[in-house]
Structures are given as structure tokens and as C-alpha cells.
Image 1: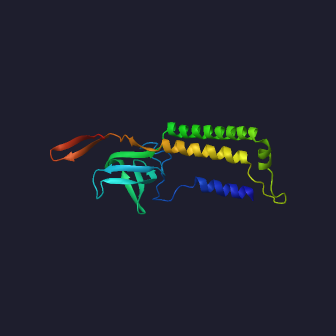
Image 2: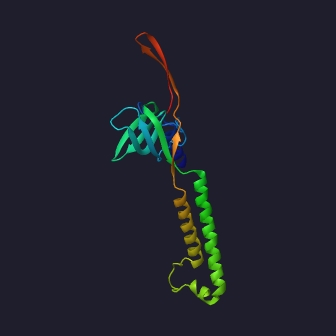
Length: 191
């Protein structure tokens, strides 16, 4: 039975997509920061709305599917964009938040230990189970203080280093187009 399930799962994983279906590439050819789930802001060359703002749903080659408000999907090519920006948190901002979480947790733990050193009897009674017949164990006060101060300082670090818009350099386009006097050679540079 297991071998039949394994064979069916393997066949499902390697089955080619149906005709006409597009499979997004594993890594976007625009930029790695333009990934599904990220906020995107773009200025378009032509169209009814020059500013496109929404969440990236998928990346297909040099085109992006953007979920705009209210519940509409827009497929935009890089050729139609004058500028492209993505909302990301930098590594420094993420590390800052993690460091503040660690500092808060260590500070909360040391605060609890210092308080227990001064109030030994009260500290001993605090973690006793008030109902011995209850199967649920209460969370120790040490854990509560440590995690709450860590989360508080981690949230402060997140607020002090918010996400920012990063500009994506659009590729240079080179092409040949027919003209009235022959062939035109053009270069399209990003702004």
C-alpha cells in the first residue's frame, strides 16, 4: 500500500503541467526581492492609472502579477514600468529587532532573579499550583516575565526599524524596430 502511495505521489510531482498552463520560474528574473507576498509600487508608462500599488502574487519571467485593491489582479511587464519599488525590511533592521528581543528577555530574567533574591518567601509561593487536582500546569512567572519583556523590546525594535521602499533597477532594453526609412535601433534605459 505504501509503495502504491509513494508511486502515485512521485507521478503527481513529475507530471508536466497541462497545455497552456504557465509555471512561474523558481527565481524571478526581475530581482530576487520581487517575490510573492511583497508590497510593490510601480510607475507605469501608459494606462489609466500611472501608479500601481499592490501585493505581488506571482512572477512570470519579466512580468509580475499584482493584486491591487479591491480584489483585482493585474499582469504588468517590466517593459511597461518606468520605476519599480518593493517594500522590504533590511537585514540590519531584522537583526536589530532580534537583538532587542534578546536584551529584553535577558533583562526580564535578571529582573525576576533580582526580585526573587529580595523576596524569597513570596517568590516561592508564587509558582505553587493553587489547585493540585487540576491537570493544567500554570506557566511559571519566570517564563512570563522573560517572554513578555523580550516581546516588548522586540516590538520596540520592529517599530524603530520599519520596512522601507527599495528601488529595483530595471533592465536595459535593446531592440530593432522597422521604420519608414529602414530599421531603427533603440536602447531603453531605466530612469
